[in-house]
Amino acid sequence: MRMLRSILGAVTLASLVLTSGACTGKVTGADDNCENEKIRLGLAPACAGCHVAGNKPFFASLTAFENGLVYDERYVKRGDPENSMLVQMLEGTAAGSYPQMPPGQPYEELVAHGRTSLTIEQVKAWIRDLPPPPARLEAPDAEAFTVRRLSAEEMVVSLMDQLGLTLEDFVSTSDPDWRNKAYVVNGGKLFVWPGDWSPGISDQYVSDLRSIERFEALGGGNSLLYRKKDVGFGPSAAQTLVQMSQAWCARAVDKKGNTAVLRYVTLADTSASNPDAVQKNLRALYLRMLGQPPSEEEAKQLYEQVYVPLEAQKNARLGWIGVCATLIRHPLWITY
Ligand code: HEC
Image 1 (cartoon, rainbow, N blue to C red):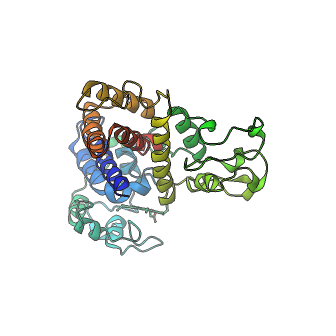
Image 2: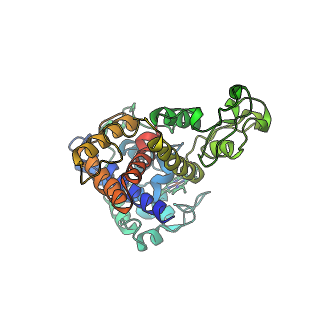
Image 3: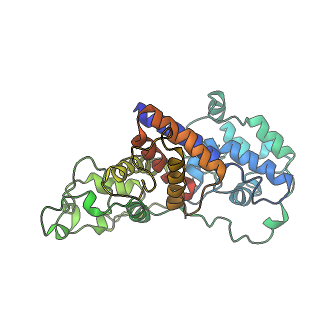
């Protein structure tokens, strides 16, 4: 558990750093956007967990934030913080079905515990001085709200592929006819598999029903059980993905001859003995998992805040599992 926490701690840290900086990048010149971006990043630790995908992905990008939240009169009344639902939600007093965001925990408490540093007063001040919407919002924006989460099927398939794993890594293949029978799941592998894809009918298709339950927790459907897939990305999906990413990354690192995660290093290389190889491998893994190379800053953060501490805590193996699992929980991995 301590190890898990420290991985998660590192992940939170890393993903925060990984998403910042948009203000200086794509957004062109305007300071207004920067103010909006600061508020977005300030609220993100309290909100992004549930709002980077699904039908209210306000925190997926600055554009999504502005189009979906900031310049929607229902949520933010320019110049009038007291009558803005956003403020009321932070204060837990909004009318309607969702009086409080985040649900279940007063925003002030998060500030008090240092989980976020942006205060409600700062949000109010920002709304008081909120400039009119940037011109680009008046034209339809192809980028807005087009992000969606990966489906559970896509997560299972692409993760196996990216990590160099196959079905045979999870189920027993000793019976030559194994593909046509209920899969016998090897223990401790955290197999996740759609009920709809397994041979047989009903619950005979896998020896370990948890592999199907996990798939459903990831948001996957099950036609035999008339279960629709869940297009949101709630806490149970996030939790399942955390477990799955750690177990599958460990499997990928331990699999003999598998170069999916360890392409330019072996477990004998460390940040002390071969820092260049470690850095190179980290960048290659980032590209492999997220489809774009990391910025200098991101590569540095991932190295210094995820890899190095885990390596120091235990060994290179844990460092790579941590880096790999961090990338899987990156917003770029989860969304499409
Ligand atoms: C634990 C998950 C979770 C967190 C964290 C969370 N939300 Fe929500 N939010 C929801 C759900 C669920 C809904 C309602 C379902 C929907 O419309 O997607 C919702 C709806 C909303 C809505 C639309 C309400 C409406 O009536 O139209 C706004 C605005 C919103 N959230 C803002 C925020 C903000 C701002 C934060 C951070 C301070 C936040 N949320 C944190 C889960 C969350």
